[in-house]
Length: 545
Image: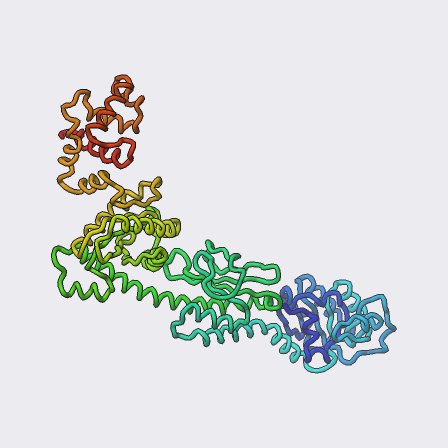
């Protein structure tokens, strides 16, 4: 911020300008400088404006007094008049009034003189300026318009500095695509302050600032955050139509560097545009690769028989394997996130989470989630399958809460024709996992038992015969066991409620349930077996069946 006192310290002003009166207002901010030929002209005065009268006023000119009052009423910064050489014999010093020789010499104000009054400025005018607290300056010689030019140059210094910094930023971040890390390194050299690159959750990726946690990452706008001894500037870098910024660029300005807080944001915007250019380039490559992977996966899942030579070549180019034993996996999103989450940028994050658990897997964007598989050279033992499932569950815990919601895992199937089978099993398991919070939203086909088989049957014409076969041991048994089982499962395994629905004693219901378990060889305390039997009961009891 420029003040009247700062103007008086200019080399061009210090030998020419002195304070005649109103020293109390020397620290008032100056935002503009206006030349004025006639002090009596009714030109409006803006707040923070210093008025420089370019022609010497007449002795005891009342128009100067009127100008002082207009400037004070408008919140102006002060008035400068051409005063000529000081008249040291005009009057004796008056030590009690600011602007007189007794007090000026000790005031420490640049440009202060020992004069009492100046040609064209009366004692009454000086007293008025002191009473108003408005700096009244006198130019002893030279052209007042030269003073206007030097003052305006000082006021324009922040804009000039900003323009120079923006130009340097454009030169540093030219049209070449640079990695975000390279952009931040160049930005730090350009600003000379600590800078950092943050991810969309505010976690540091590169740089050295320690105040990145102050960024409000859920407010997707440029931010200025006050620090104890400075300010933190943050700028988001995002893809068009993206729900959240991919990166945040932050600059930490402390101490004297904080004075440039108004100058740095445009340069930060240029750096953010360079990061956005890199994001767009990467996104185009990812989109192209994603489309190719998705198309290849679709061809493999539709494969009927031996793959062609062309298909095998595409698989090899993608780095995938068709030989060996495959275990499919399916990762799904929460229902509300399907329409908002962009899958492509998160594929690499899923691969990293799997890799962190020692799982080398193919992961492909597919529908409203991701489909993938891992391959064993030989048929895996049950122990190896259990170990794999445990690692997949750990990876799912890493991903859950950020991008993934539920995961399903298929059984091992061999060769290309088995890939579609294990992926289908994983998809079914994921569909069930989405409704199983008690299982951690994670299910493996080997854990599903009859529920998995019945779910597969619901997609075929063999479902009703399978359901009847499942309940066949209960047919022709006394006590209408199928009806009892259906009512028991509808009542959420409540003996008392089932007895009330059937109109029998609760001991009768308990005895029938025990007979059902023995005849079918099931445990109705197991949720998957309850699910299978419940679906079967509903199927065989539908009207017309």
